[in-house]
Length: 486
Ligand code: BGP
Image (cartoon, rainbow, N blue to C red; front, side, top):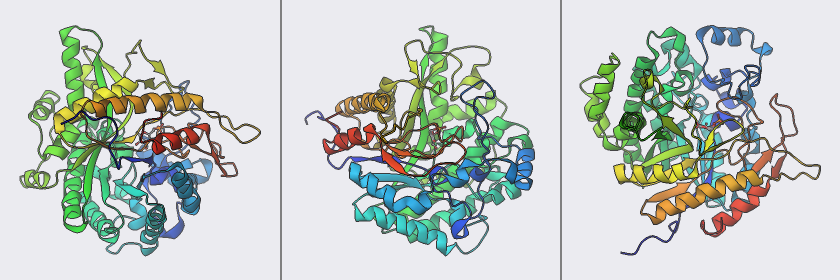
């Protein structure tokens, strides 16, 4: 057998989005309010940091936002109005040569409170129209069932995924969308970045953290329920959808040891294990032994029922998807268990440059991640998010010269290609925010990732006109050459 020369034929080049960051129309078409509709914009520079996260909401904030919503800005309510622009946007994706478009379905569009017995037909019809539009151009949808939002009613009534009730409510939702779109969608991801439950319980699991006694325990309990829901959805997909491909997904943050000191090396191993816990369960179908020791060390009691083992075993995924933005530095220290697996390491990697939002830029980390993941799972991988959040300037003549983005993307594609040559089975690449959208973490519009510029500011003002950036033309060439011309 010869070594791989590069990306395989039929490689799924495309771009990625999420309903709550693009759709807008938050009350149209019978949609119910979702958790992301309550992420209020906060001046990102007020706290003196560019990463003033808006994705954790407390119970008192939720009450305040419900009563006095007119006093706040909720950018995820307007998104980029994809709901009314999807034809234009998909045509632009097609112009770039997309083979694949990753999007999510808003649970609250299908079941406005999550509790109804019958789905909302208008919501279902909207995604039919979107998938039909993709089909016109031969673009395969890659659909996330749950991307950082859920009906707010489920937070109010059950405090989100803490409650086991959500498992069957999600299964009902999953079966409805699988049945409805079985001839239009074959690539599915159940939950977006499940490991981020450890960082933001509200965004990942609809849990109001101030109402739980132990956040870490709550994160694992909520995750357990999502594992069950995911496995049941995967099982249903296998029965309903012809040629289905089911994926799990994490935010892959490779931990490097700070020094060659064995204690630091061990810390890196443990930090990576905590991230791998998620795909370990979803790809192998059972809890790995190390997590029980971690639970014991941290005095965590997770309710797991006897029948759960069977559910997990019967719902393993076909591929492992990751988002990749950065690597992380692990160091052995007193509070290390709190740092392990966290998003933004307090320790700087002196070899890496930072983005304007202080995210370390590490293309080789992507290659390392892919090699290690493939070694571990021997299942196809999918890079379903990657990209550079940056401030772009729209020139007088409506151009965006984003050479910094081209540089970032090009280095990442090159490292992916090396990983493929080294034997990794990679299915596709859908860079994040292929069209500018509302930031998940900061709710800013000005943190832009797209190949397509959307004329709108952080307060929602702008013409919503779409403009092709320089990176648009660059990516078009990348796709046309199947990743050879980068
Ligand atoms: C991932 C999420 C996305 C997304 C991206 C960039 O964690 O899955 O929803 O937005 O990160 O993050 P941000 O928007 O905070 O820059």
